[in-house]
Image (cartoon, rainbow, N blue to C red; front, top):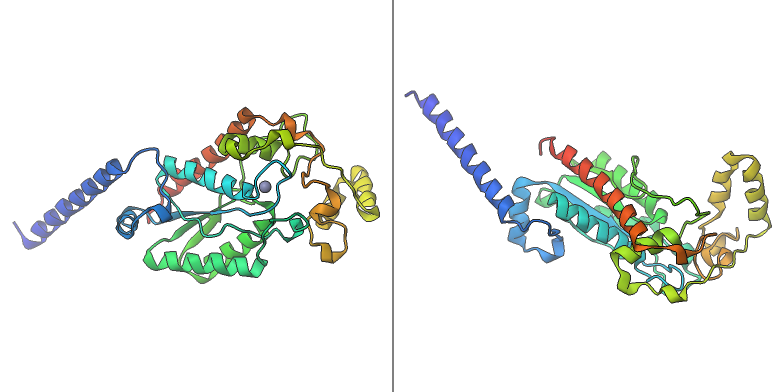
Length: 301
Ligand SMILES: [Zn+2]
């Protein structure tokens, strides 16, 4: 047998052994359990990186969610769904931030907020650390609309200045799927039927249904005018939206507490929230993300 042939046989044997140990590793990993970075040891991470370079980074917020939902609602949503996705795909979840950009909710006590540039820097530096060890495919799972702009900036920075690839798979993703809108809901944006249902499914012990009251809605003259005009000219909706969810210092009347008396942004009654609806929403988001990740796994490391 020529040396060349012996070499290629040995190589083949090596590849077989390596793939065998990978599949044993996969079997050894408990099925259906999420992989959370903080719960792993460094050797777990080293072994994981031999077979996978993907990581999910949940992005949420610590901000008021009405009198009935916890301040950590968006964090629990992002983290809860990321863990479900991890359990189904075996991809590591690495939570790095508990707060997001929420300054316009600061009229309600307890709300935390980071400046967009601070948040971007923390997310980028953490991603850089993860890159050191070999992580190359980043998936941000955001569940707070106010973070979208930061998510976009971080992804752009990763994609344009490093070897890694970053995409969004939650709120603010280009191909967001699975959001479920009931038929009888009007303007259900924040801490309303949608989010209350999500929390009834993901973290029911923190939901205080008996505290729900409809928010008293107050729009200033400018907001009222644009609201009325956008009924006739739907393209003006974006101007109306640009005035809402902004810091009180802008004097636009669009801070959370200036518009909604108890922090619930909805014209529909959140008492209509159900665990079943929450389950439907969660399963929609999760199955889209899982499908995406399995497809991306087909591309080589
Ligand atoms: Zn929220």
